[in-house]
Length: 360
Length: 134
Image 1 (tube, helix red, strand yellow):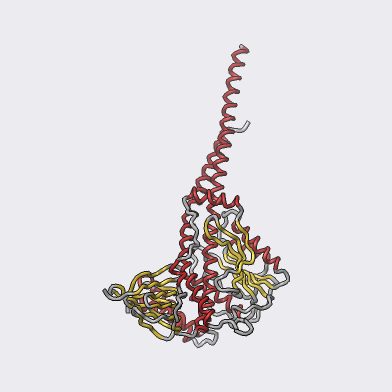
Image 2: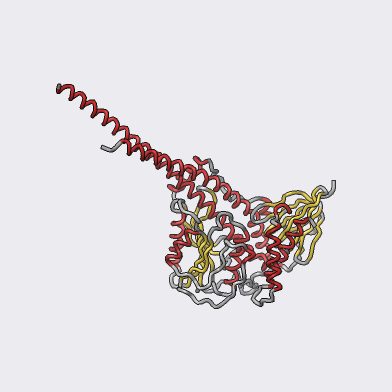
C-alpha cells in the first residue's frame, strides 16, 4: 500500500512545479507581446525600403536590357560551390521542440546540399551548442554580434583554409534578448563582403517565421543572391500541424496573449515611393540602388531575428501551458490515489477493531 | 496658419516622428537640404548628421545615421537607420566611440579601415552635437 505521507509530499512538489511553469508561461506571454510589437514596428521600414527598391529597379536599368543579366553583384546568380547557412535558434531551452525543430530543418537542408562546401553561422546558444558538437570551427571566425558595433575591427580577407566541408564560421550568443538593427546590419555587412569576394555563392537563413501565435512556419529562406525584390525566396517550409495550432491557441488564450497577426501592412507605408510622379533623384538611381540593396539584406536578417524571438516566446508559452496542464492532471490523479489509500487504511482499521471485538 | 506638410521619420525599430511640420532640414548625401511645403518630388540618400524640423514654430533635432528620404509636395518621409532625440543619446558612449575612432585614425596603422573609422567618428560627432543642442 502506498504511503500516504509520501504521496502528500509528491503532491506538494508537483504543486510547486505547477506554480513555476505557470509563472514562466505568463512571463513568456508578456515577452511575446513585446516581441510582437517590435516585429510590427519594423514593418513600415521594410515595406518602404522594398517599395523604393522596386521603383528603382524600373528606373535604374539594373538589368541589362539585352541579356537580362543583372548589373549588381548581389543579384547575380552563380554556381553554388560554397554556401552560408545562418541558423537562428534560441539562447534558452524549455521551449518545447522549438530549437530541435529548427536544427532538424537545418540538418535536412545540409543533406539536400551534400557535396558542397557549407559555412555555418549560428545565432543563439542552443544552436551553437548543437552545431559545435558536429562541425569543426573555421580558422577565422566572424565577430560576435554580442560585442558593441564600434569595437568591430576589419576582418582581413585572408584566403581561408577550410577546416572541413562543413564548418562553423561564427557564433552569436546573447543577442536575442534585445535585438538591435545595428547587429543585423553588422551581420549583413560581413555576409555581403564575403559574398562579394566570392567566398560565398549563396546565403540561406533557417528560422522560425512568425506571423501570429497560430500562424508560424519553419523556413529556409535564400537571402543572397536576391532573386526578386519584395518576394521571399522560401526554399523549404514546414507549417504547424493542427495539433500544434490548437495547443498554441489554448495557451495564448489562457495567458491572455493576443492572436493578432503581425502582418498587416500599413497603407501609408505601402504608398511610399510609389507615387506616379517624376522624382528628382539627388543621386543617380543606380547609385541609390547600390546603397539601398545592402539595407534590404539587413532588414531581412533583422526581421528573421525579431520573428524568431517572438516564435521562441510563443513556443515557450505553449510548452509551459501544457506543462501546467500536465501538472494539474498529475495532482488530480495523485490526490485520487491518496484518498484511496486513506480510505483503505481507515477500512482496514475498522475491520481490525471489529474483528478484534468479535474475537472477544 | 502657416503652410505645413506631413513628416514621418521611420527607423527599423520604430516610428520616431509622425507629425506635421513647417520646415525640415535633412543631411542629404550631397549636402544639407532645407525643405518647405510644396517641394518638388525628390528622392535622396542621407548621410550622417542631424535632422532639424519645425513644428508649431518649435525646433526639434534628431541625430541620424544613414538613411534616405522621399519628398513629396505635402509629405516628407525619412527612412533612417537610426534617429535619436537628444534625450535618447548616450553621450558617454558617443564620446568613447569618438575617442576610439580618433585613436584609430591617428595611430598610423595601415590595417585601419579609414572609411570605417571616419564613419564612426562622424556618427559620434553628430550624436554629440545634437545632444549638446548646438
